[in-house]
Amino acid sequence: MNRKSSYLNIEFLSACTEAKLYPEDFGNEVAICGRSNSGKSSIINALANSKKLAKTSNTPGRTQSINFFSINSDVDYKLVDLPGYGYAKASKKMQKDWGRQITNYMNSRESLRGIILIMDIRHPFQKADQDFLAWCRQYHLPVQLLLNKADKLSRNQGLNVLSASKKELINLKLLNEPLLFSAKTHDGVEQLTKNILSWVESA
Image (cartoon, rainbow, N blue to C red; front, side, top):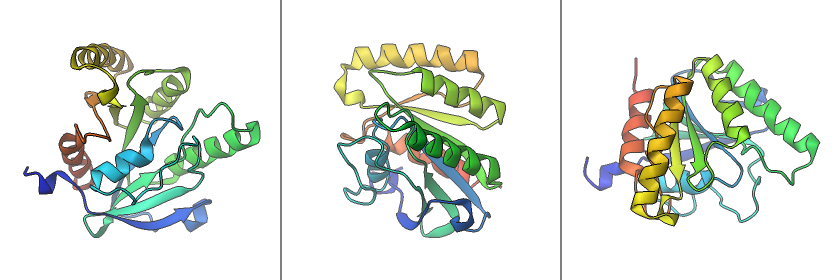
């Protein structure tokens, strides 16, 4: 894969606050989720080699809708940006609303093929992450774990976290190996692009 094809052509489709607004449930889609400070919007921008496709903010928990994007100009292939979870300063009502949104989406979409779960490499496998992984296992959804912000650690430190994460996922019996990732340097973008395409292009 050359440098140009390391990226995806990602185009915004719609922002949905309730299920009746979702795009039609056909084709294949991959959802991206993580704690509210994990860098989800920055990762979407990195995948598209863009700085402004997904809005980023210094305030965690900004994404409150479920945002649908097409992949490579094909509405059969979608990337779905789910609200971030685990923002401690959010009101209990807001946390409950976000949880209900995510649950309703994941329960209802026949076209969902897998989940990209983002964790800050410096603080992986917090309780909210563990709960989300257990939920994915219960519903037999394959998970691609991204250890984001790898640029914040030395290479050896990153590899140590990667090794520990592999052992954690073996215990959880989830499929894909975790991936070191940096939305800032785009390390890991090429492999994540391949993995996303393998899911959405599956029969």
